[in-house]
Amino acid sequence: MSTPVLQSRLPQVGTTIFTVMSALAAETGAVNLGQGFPDFGCDPALTQAVTDAMAAGHNQYPPMPGVLVLRQAISDKVAAVYGRRYDANTEITVTAGATQAIITAILATVHPGDEVIVLEPCYDSYVPNIELAGGKVVRVPLTPGTFRPDFEQISAAINPRTRALLINTPHNPSGTVWTAAEMRQLEALLAPTNVLLISDEVYEHMVFDGQPHESAARYPGLAERAFIVSSFGKTYHVTGWKVGTVVAPAPLMAEFRKVHQFNVFTVNTPMQHALAAYMADPKPYVELPAFYQRKRDLFREGLARTRLKLLPSEGTYFQCVDISEVSDLNEADFCQWLTREIGVAAIPLSAFYGNGFDQRVVRFCFAKKDETLLAALERLARL
Ligand SMILES: Cc1ncc(COP(=O)(O)O)c(C=O)c1O
Image (tube, rainbow, N blue to C red; front, side, top):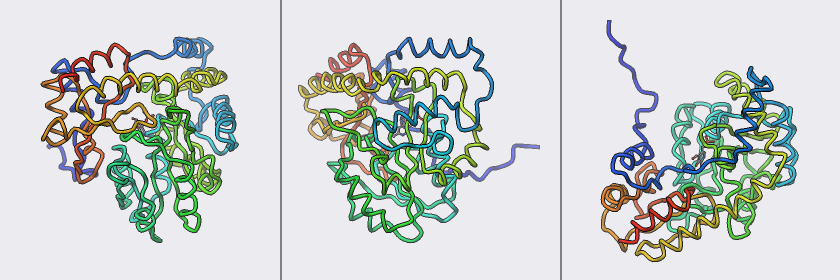
């Protein structure tokens, strides 16, 4: 007997660039500004709330859609911040991170042969998720250079087979944030269609320079067709907890829960109680833009003294730079070189495109302690 030979469901998928760059950073002792996660701790009150929840006996299966107090807290928060009230019983589900929310929304709605539009560059799970559902991936580029949505191209990609459109604002990797005008344009574009919207808003509380986050929840014509996805991991500096949330109109949520029920069923109970208690105070997410804007500005000030060309960072915890003044290498080779020779790890934007499109831009993550950012800048000063 030997192991049966498999035909891969995802033949294109290999080790992700994030894993490769993190491993290289560890091996070479480089400052890791590649993978997107904070190198600082969360509020001790939040970990204490988990301990308290465990001590209070919240250690068994929660209800399938999530503990009610957390769903109520999410409902109140979304209503307060974006002005739309989602029903805690029928329109909100707690997920194992945004990642599980997105794949579940896709598996619940995409039939084999349905088309799903992604706007490239895009987060790396979207395409394999669509493929696992048997859907056809339709790639539409964001405008090269500015990364703004190109509505002519999006419109041209929509046809009767289009099941869903995936958007992400604030946007990983570019740091762009969709404007109210762009959201209204999307609303008008989708109005005559049967297209669902999956709106990845995991960086909703990282928008800078006093600008608002234009959630799809603010736009009735979008909200009525949207799964809106968020991540407590991003908002509260606990990416390893893998707790996220999805809100959607009841008929969409009913289908979502059919899939959710039979893949994770539920998400860990004590974290949910802790998050519900912690959300009672809006201060941590209200103050998050200022917290990250200060880090962005510190990092940009240092980068401005190099020959790397700064692109705007309107939101997220990412800063992109154009490398063409500094090097003739392609993005991926430049990132290898930067890690080995300069001692700072970054991510090539080509990793976010299906065809490896190379525009000489790389991404740094500034969700790091000031001392980490300063150590990276000291090294980058050689460029
Ligand atoms: C755009 C985007 N969507 C989704 C996720 C996944 O979020 P989570 O860790 O909550 O699964 C990330 C994490 O990096 C992301 O950048």
